[in-house]
Amino acid sequence: MYWYQCEKCGAHLDPGEHCDCEEEAKREAERRGNFYKEEAGSKRYTLNRFPEKLEV
Image (cartoon, rainbow, N blue to C red; front, side):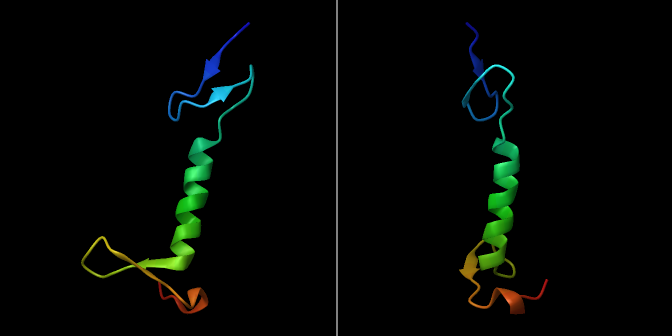
């Protein structure tokens, strides 16, 4: 029996299975970007109530 584990997140995987932790992190960052915007000059985020009006 084989034991596979993701080197990045530590998830236990079946033989031949690939971890999607990197893709999930990218999707989460994109999702977060749709609802929050970074305040100018700081690393603080505020809720963007109107995502369609967000200026990039």
